[in-house]
Length: 166
Image 1 (cartoon, rainbow, N blue to C red):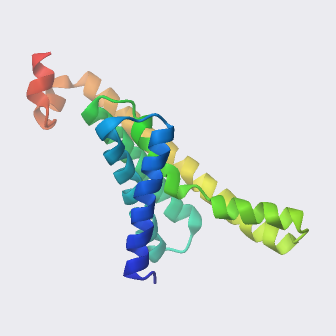
Image 2 (image 1 turned 60 degrees about the horizontal axis):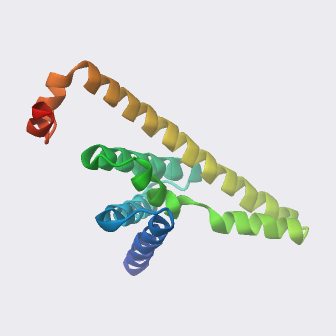
């Protein structure tokens, strides 16, 4: 079980790390706040999923699906590119520590360290990839449905009047 204060600390740090990445990625103005929020929420989903299962592939996949769908939703709402929100949101998922210890295992000729951390790193990266494929597939089908059935989407969509006037 992760302590509440540790969760809060990790979520806040993820928020600022995602904003920092957003600045490097040249996201400007108020778009930085939802970009940072995406990183914080993704970290929260990641931690909560770790409480449900200890299978890295599973909890990383679910968090990656969340990050990608969050980015797609905000991109649709703001008419900005989805990468503005997806890339900062995935920053907390990058397995930098696992990659570091995998490389350290190679340098120190420690087969145990290399295989343990290397396999976990590959599972994390596979989970991110699977999550993005799943989310982008869902987003693609939603966009196709919206193009084929614009009247249904205008009724359901919160900005339906704005879209109907254009």
